[in-house]
Image 1: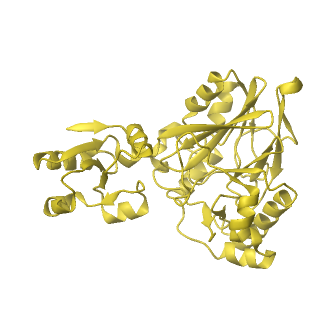
Image 2: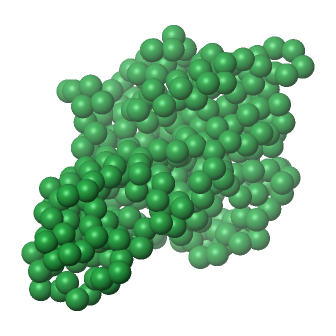
Image 3: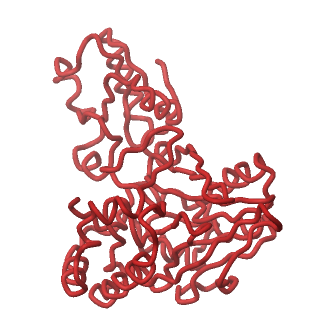
Length: 363
């Protein structure tokens, strides 16, 4: 039986080389989260529905952790299908990364994409120094980005207290000997540096600036970061297809009003050409290899309905969009607050599943 890794699957998907991706989990598992383009046929039903699978297709099988997909691939091989199992299943898919780069002013921004889960982190560098924004617990990836470009990590920034994935901020800051910056209003139980008014990367003519913008709404301590006046790292405040959900703290109307003011107070004065770089990407946003996930502020002003709403209408709409919480979100929040009884890198099973921190809007 042939197998490939989840990273190899991503490469094949990006090259449009997957003709048939078969997910053999239950319909409930599939509905909750699946690889885009996959076809669901539970393993127990597979022997009775082989006619649904094209004989000429190269079939890649997927499940939760790899066992069921291996069984499915063996069954298909016995029936003379060309079948390959995905090692580690959706658990491995949750930890598939790639990156893309853009230049803004004197800064270089590397977007580190956790493609399977839709999480976006950033390394922003200039003149030999960098800051890391919203790192996952796979902190080696961010160090490798910095080292490959000759940057020294001088700060680690979390845009907010995350509810859908574990933050690697504390571990990366400790390893790099750099401060961890987090909004003071976040209810964390560990020491962190006070958010500065301005961060300078490097010195001289090639230095770049990062300006933190307090943006309560999704959480009370949410912060956006304006890089060189030309790119806005929006965290979970503003997405390419919606805004951050305000209901996770059970104070939806209050947080929705804060969110409205945070978005408009900071973006109404910015030019249309400012690039928006969010912390998540939804299923409706196309992600291409080597291309930064982004939109201009002008594009969002034109197509994103919530940005056109008056205050009362926005509050009513955003507060009324409560939906299913991110999987294990309460346990993830406790861990990110500093109260886990295990190291964060031993809690990776909590992250398996989609992100659900956005209120997706009509465009």
